[in-house]
Structures are given as C-alpha cells and as structure tokens.
Image (cartoon, rainbow, N blue to C red; front, side, top):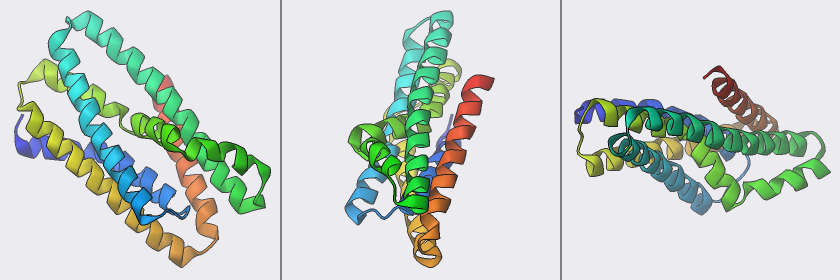
Length: 194
C-alpha cells in the first residue's frame, strides 16, 4: 500500500472526526481546547490504525478477527454512549438551559473526549488490521499520515463549526446537539449491523 492509498484512507477515516468536531465546535470551545481535541482525535486515528496493524501481524487470523470484533464493539458502544450524552446535553442547553445538561457535562471532560475519540476512530483499528493482513507498509510513515490527516480534518471541523455557530447564533447549539446525536445513532446502527 503506497502513500497515496494511505492518504486516501486517512481522509475517509477522518471524515467522522470532521463531522463530530463540526458539532462540538458549535458549543463554544477555547482555541486551546479545539487544538487539543484535534490533536487527540488525529493521534487516536493513527494510534488505533497502528494497533490494528500490529494485532494483524502478531496474532493468527481467527483469534485476530474475534479480538477485532470485540474491541470494535466495546469501544464503539462506549464512545456512542458519550456522543449521545454530549448531543443530548447540547440540545438540553439549547432548549432549557436545564439540569440534564449539567449532568452530562461531566462527559465533556478529558475521559469523555478520549472515549469520543476512540469511538470516532474505531474504524482505524479495523483498517489497520486489514492493512496488516494484506500488505506490508512502513508503519511509522502510515501512522504519521493518519495522525496528521485526522488532526487536520478535526481542526477543519472545529473551524467550520465555529463559523457556523457565529452565523447561526444560539440555534447552532441545538443544531450541533442534533448533529452529534445523528453521528452517534449512525455509529450505533453500524455496531448492531456488523
């Protein structure tokens, strides 16, 4: 697998990072937090791809397949739960400035965002495992490309979300919550379909 293919794969995998960050940005975040989350999501994309690749090259095929399926489901379920909570919190803030938002706001901290990042990037683990079964690659280069592209798309999502939030005003918070809930429901459907 060459650099062009890895770059194209990184773009495809990073699309989920972009859409989640688009929604997260409509709930005002500091530039430092947006940068941190962009780097976190991109780093997790590269890291999970490398983990999947290493698992594929180190474990026999049947065991690897079971491990991949279990890990995919566990990370996906945890991250989807956090995404739903964040989306519901944004909608609650928009509708009522209410109590529910204060309870789910706990999930917006670092542990919650790591779970969101793992959930959004769990497909990178599967892609890495597939790459490990099919082809030898220069792993450090592939991880760098995956991480940079994932971080870049996350950052673009934050920028686009911030601009949309400024133009849409307060309604953007409700729209962001709805977008994040839709992404979570898509991920949930994917978990049960696979």
